[in-house]
Image 1 (cartoon, one colour):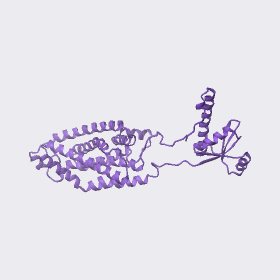
Image 2 (cartoon, rainbow, N blue to C red; image 1 turned 45 degrees about the vertical axis):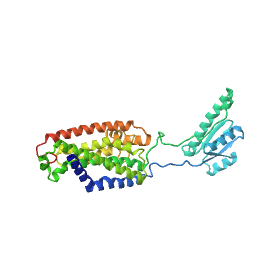
Image 3 (cartoon, rainbow, N blue to C red; image 1 turned 180 degrees about the horizontal axis):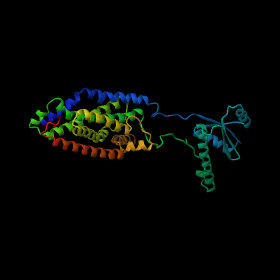
Image 4 (cartoon, rainbow, N blue to C red; image 1 turned 60 degrees about the vertical axis):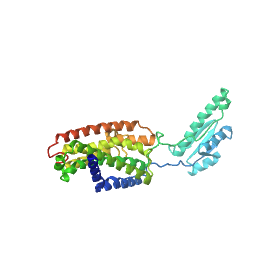
Length: 369
């Protein structure tokens, strides 16, 4: 019962602190909106392909009829045009490209062979030639049921790897979440400094309450509050901004190792430096560095060796990569790997902090100065 009352007191201190509402809740909500809106024009939008119309000069025959008809299926309109008309438009400078289909030779005439229209025509022409050759081979082998050319839309535009990717709000809905959880390290640090700032350290040490339970209650309280704040942010992002987290319960489970890591970072920094001011400066610097390395503020160039290395060694990079992979691809390998590494680092730092805490037991440095 005494432990529950102590835990409640510590939790109440964090919940009612002004920085909890301003820094840990309102700030990330506003920042997600600002960054999500600012970068919405460069992420997650679809570019429609233009309607392609190309004049074609051909000898009227079955081959040209099939070529023109199947072009419609692929989104390309070939307009039958006389050679004289094509020459007139070329001389006038009003025609940049046309197709010539004569004597079974297919030629693309273009002033800009790198244009989107020219590339689409070349893609279709290559597909048509391959299909025509297959049809000829089918007739030769007597497989007449496979001789008819079969064309559908031959090009489909997706992401490079064909996988679902987050838009700007989806991206910052994750990175701002993990960033603000990192700032929770200062909340954990403030709980250890609480007895010093309120001048109750000596009275606490003189009480029959075991000091190891003091450490336990403060670290557990910090971790739980950090997770609750994360849950509030996730719910706000989901219902206000429409950000999809796939399964909120699973995401919360995946964030537990990060909460332990963050809490351990805060309490170990305080125990090593012994002063809240010094620990606060260190935690601000390390938070900025880890979030930057983990792509929290903006996506890091994937083709840069240095940035790629920084991303791979950042604990925030581990959890961000894991969450993106789970939410948008449904895979858990990356998040499990990152969670295990975070948990290992967190428990190691927590052990160091606990050893230092117990070593100081009985002195005026316990739980404070």
